Image 1: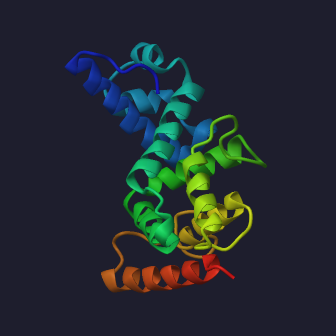
Image 2: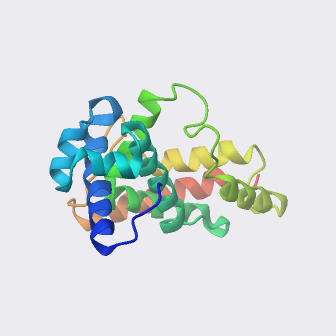
Length: 194
């Protein structure tokens, strides 16, 4: 992200821009997002937004990379139980569906193939942890990236980008508990050593 302002008033404006832009980009994507709506929702002006972020593309990048960092920090990987990691990802998608929508827009509008984030690797730690577990015989062999991608995809089975069903936090807790149990069991079986 760009340098955050030092004054309390500037920091509040900066935070309002981030919050408004996150909602705008999650709903409309990069091409569909409008700076006019963002500054109106953030109660600021274009000059201030551009002063903090440069342009619309850089604003999206700041929000998108912050969302990747958030998922990394809020849902750290624990190789001892990749199944529980998948369940924590599922819960994070329920809590913050905007984060998964941002990743979807980045995929649709920027990277039709290959790594979602070119040149920046937010998964290096995850890959190292999986490789170490594979070397210790606790996780099935194979490409650590492919294994990580599979676990993430399984965690997204009911996310806002699912092809069959988008879960919400408003659904009954027992429904989420059933999904968590199924997800945990399927991931455990998928990553178990041969």
